[in-house]
Length: 279
Ligand SMILES: NC(=O)c1ccc[n+]([C@@H]2O[C@H](COP(=O)([O-])OP(=O)(O)OC[C@H]3O[C@@H](n4cnc5c(N)ncnc54)[C@H](OP(=O)(O)O)[C@@H]3O)[C@@H](O)[C@H]2O)c1
Image (cartoon, rainbow, N blue to C red; front, side, top):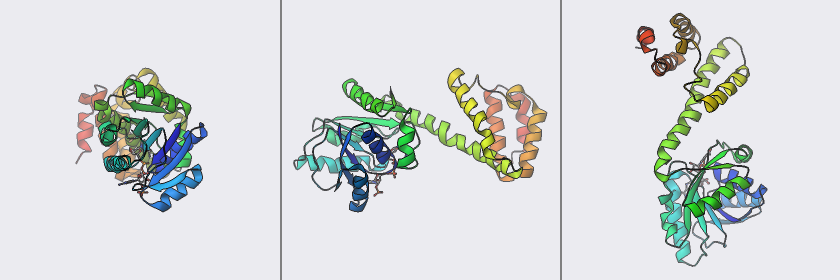
């Protein structure tokens, strides 16, 4: 496919690098700052442009701006179409949260609109492009476009799945819970391990097993440990250690004990211990 990238940020460039590696051609990189467009275009062997200029023809427009700029970017692109830029077949954005309706200004030109959300973290384009291989790609589109976008995701080594437009906020909250909130607990773990001079890497296999078990048998069935067993004395000893060695993390630790006890049906046993440590 011939692709135009609008918004050469972390996700856009990760996808563009992966797409180029998969044999697609990045025709133009469009940014709001000419310098940003030029830098990205050079690396991709593409032409650099800005939003208020006419664009070379391509098959797919990828609007990879921040979520809150998708609609305004689509409106600018619609103006280019009004002025004679050739319409692509398809236009997508990369948000797991925003509705595909944010691209509605383009639909009136007969462009099929959708979204492709790589369910992966792309902190920079170099790491991002590598992480896309094997990642799941949540696609929101009508069936015909879905098939073409699924093929695009597969060409980059991705695994496509379908998300209804109305389901996106719920899906996105789930992704945040799994990815961002998990890091909160790893930060608690890091502070505790630092206090006793143990490197965080020892947690690697344990964390990998937790994730594998959760995906394989479901997170509720994967629950083990003293809260799930109802072992109050052990948890009290853990809380005392946290209070001694990472007091700033005590609130998070105790609130996790409370959440876990409720989920595991052990609240009656842990209510007093939690109350004792909740101010
Ligand atoms: N990064 C991830 O891990 C990840 C994962 C999955 C999905 N996504 C999705 O990918 C999209 C982009 O996220 P990102 O992390 O790549 O953000 P980012 O690194 O901040 O990149 C955003 C890009 O949009 C441009 N931009 C911002 N405001 C604009 C405007 N008003 N008009 C035109 N361009 C504008 C930025 O240009 P400037 O440099 O000029 O600001 C930059 O090129 C979002 O929809 C996000 O939800 C990201």
